Length: 288
Image 1 (tube, rainbow, N blue to C red):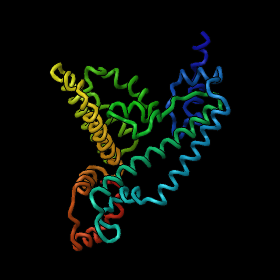
Image 2 (cartoon, rainbow, N blue to C red):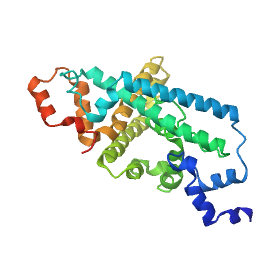
Image 3 (cartoon, rainbow, N blue to C red):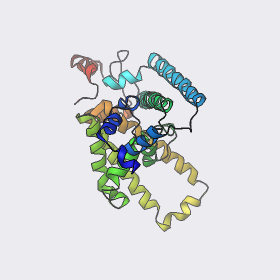
Image 4 (cartoon, helix red, strand yellow):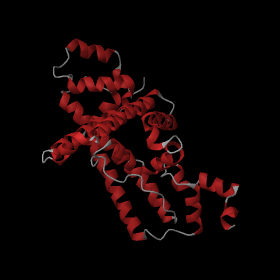
């Protein structure tokens, strides 16, 4: 009876416009929010919140240093690999720039989500932690999405993934799920590029997992050299994460261009550099 009394329009409006979580989350369900509104969280002390805020300050400092020392974030945002120092960047540096940009995105969202979570904790709420592990500490695509924006992942699993059939239908349901998330972020094609590239790499991972589960491969995974194969797979996983998540900047065309620059060994001619400059490629930003 007490629970029903709290399910009012006034409480719903207060939940929707709850300031600490309104701007950037983490995502918290209405029943969970109501529970902490009745009784404040006691799991995280004031000292622990202060320590978390100190770490957030260090994260922001690291972002500032990263943006001032390395130009890779701006280069990827503008797709200006041919316009630096009047010559093209070598392929290894383009790939390294993508890795740096992915880590910048991790630090940026970690700082934003952790700051607002600390605010909510100080107010007595206990929303989920969004960044549950470092972006470089991921060995599978599915594991990455369980740890990155974890509160949204829980919401998606509960209200989309499971109603669509869960594991039984994940070969096709992930396309609907990621397309929805792309539209939820913004009505731009670059977000659909992000969504569908994630689906492609997710599908490849599902195929590899299903093949490797066959009994004939049991001996392979017990071999001492299997750990090197797993390390190689983890490295390739980071590369796919770079390509998929930088599609937010690059879009469809830019993602293909990024790959071409990563694997191109010979520098372009002066004429091609001049042509790119004349075409105004510095305003790309990943928009199609």
